[in-house]
Image (cartoon, rainbow, N blue to C red; front, side):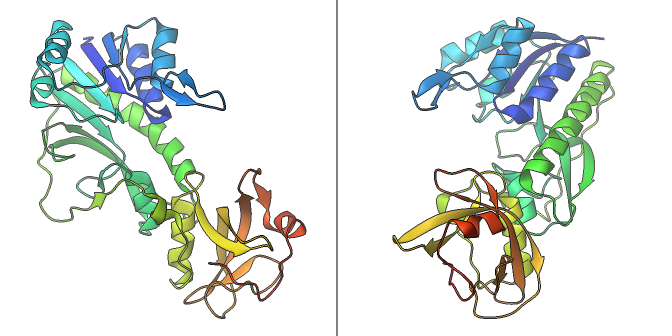
Length: 310
């Protein structure tokens, strides 16, 4: 049985779920997404990825700046939806919205709840050195990712997998999980289990200071930090190339062999010493330039073994 669905999402991560819901024949009566944002050199207002996909399907799109007004609640109730599906929408839903759909609001979250509730679960899982994560479908409550879980799928985090690669895997897996949850919901067979009180962690929103590499940490922790922030926003170090300190992003690295004072470049192959062990820089990016292999990066700067990175 098809359901009347309000879809709420914004970034690329949410697009496959919207596509799958439409493809399964559900009636998407409205799509909510964040308002167009200024981007590019001309700061032109550009619609979100979900907005673009909704336009391709000919679906009605709403971009309210807030949902915390009676007018917003009345508009939402007017959709007469059976269920709302929320995927990385980027806006908290007030009680009036949560209670509007007859069957509630389902959220696709990119972690194995209750671990990594919050804004950046993919990045934080890798940065913490987790060996597995997943996606979960939960029923939304007023708390931050506190609702009971209906379904989940686990994914191994491979030793060199970065956040971009994990993101792409989880968004496809999550889309399939959500349409399976909707199928069960339409049959009255979707059950929910409260989240355990133990094991709660929070994936706090990433800040600029989170991206600076701390070479005094063990090599494994540095490696996890780098891949957890790749390709965006990118972990970085600072170095003096003769014109003062400059930021350099590290997009790909691996564990290396060597020892020395933390942050010291040990050879021309990208081996940098850490608090314990070393990492090997594979791909880096200077400000205003494209990504390059570390060997190519060295050809454009006046540094060599013994250089110190901050």
